[in-house]
Image (cartoon, rainbow, N blue to C red):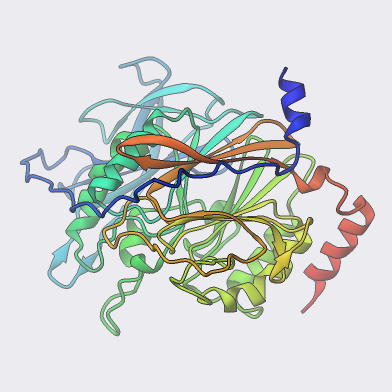
Length: 435
């Protein structure tokens, strides 16, 4: 039966059509977080991320500056057979002083296994689930989260999803210079982010620059440390990781990306190391969309697109996820501004629940490359079924119930007829060798 479904839906075949009488939701108020007195050494804002092969990074905050930076962990509740030593940092932002921010890498870990852990030798016990080492694997995807009633609805729906890794293409807390909102966001997402790895990249709301006073990404970089060093990057704003047959590239829309930049050169090197036999799926995430038929944020990604799209195309990237536009849109496979069966599918999913509301107005008529678009809050689920087929669904927050509104089967480019292996290698080698 499964084989029949995979054959039947091996290419992009359909998109569910939203009901004509659907009324798009209004924005919801910001969540209120009552002040609570906690032990100064108790871990708060606990979240995990992938940190290289068979390793995880555990991050948390304490108010006690003398709290140690280590994680005890094991495969049985209350029994910690292993210890991961870490590091800590803190930062100041005008009158705000952060707590002590800890990051500890644990591992090597077994795949598809539950581990129990405790941060800093005290506080509550947490548990996490490591991703599988091979297909199938499911990603939850949602960007532009913020801290509103719709954010909570989105997180509740993601919590119902059987996923292994959360992908977030920018705009996390919407703190926007109010640093305590980074703390409340960390508390808001802890129930999910302490159990499954969250892999994030920066958006415009992570830029909190005060010229000559504060570095623009100090809050984001201090709190959400990603595996940039593990992937050969010198910046937390762009990196890559691999999990269960998928190579994921996280790029920075708000750091230099021209062909003379560190990010561009790192991307060339990272793509050159991709082994499509080991990771037949290649995915990219960044914040500002390159293909966008919404009136909001038109042409903002053109500069990055001009520089980097040829690299992604030559490398056979399968799917690109972006945020920024507060709505949902899925394209055909595209490249150079038009449909191309050998280009990636672009999915804009900046509809996690932000306080700015939805971007409701679209270009009319719709571009030929746009397949499905809707201004609603929601999240996506990407199941990589095997090395050749993936199933994507988008679930809008319809009256607090997750309603599957768009759905498609995708076939990986590495297993398609786009290029012979020889031509693929020639195209990529030529692109990567250009000065």
